[in-house]
Image 1 (spheres, rainbow, N blue to C red):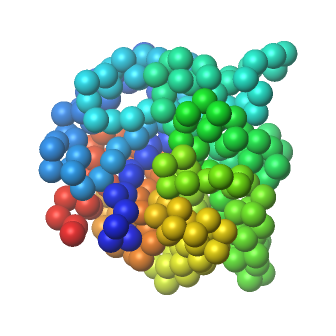
Image 2 (spheres, rainbow, N blue to C red):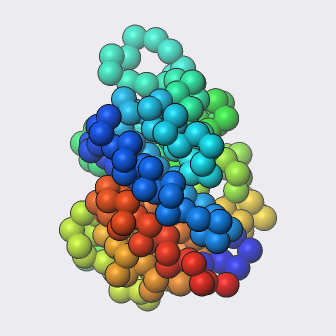
Length: 255
Ligand code: PGA
């Protein structure tokens, strides 16, 4: 955590969920009580086809929602893609860009990720910009070089604490149950903070840096207490209300 930064726990549903997810969202709304609301922000990223429904299920609650990706253009001949303005139209206020599954499955480059973040900002969305090293890069000692390159290439000029959240997700920790040592998480987050401060000054000092990769209720307390870890991006454990709330609970008594 960073004392002056309010953390956010964000759930990335990936390609999961359906119109039946309403009951699970209701459980989240019920469990996210006033004490928790004061301690930690909560956000969910359903598949875009469920975004409008999810936004309506959340209306009147303090939980935000957004999409998992957007196109860099606002309209046009891009079959299957969605524009940032459409996310706003559906009730979203945020969007993930550069998730490793997009970078790997869809060959997204840092330039494309930056263009998507700029498109998000044009529409008034907060961009959750994801970065993280592959297992081979970690093993060959290149982690910090990869993070520097991804930060430089994927985070556009003009990033602020309001329009950008950085999500550090070691690719080898996503969906595997593997989690880096606390000291490795601390080193990566301190490095990211330093890069952000060098480039963006005070905005970089107050930007949220999330950890993602196999965050569960059982390890959230330890991970969220690490310096410069300002919340979590959660995949698998965001699909069950009990687990997702269990992760948020790590913040209940944190000061
Ligand atoms: P995981 O996914 O929590 O299932 O490891 C994290 C993510 O991909 O954002």
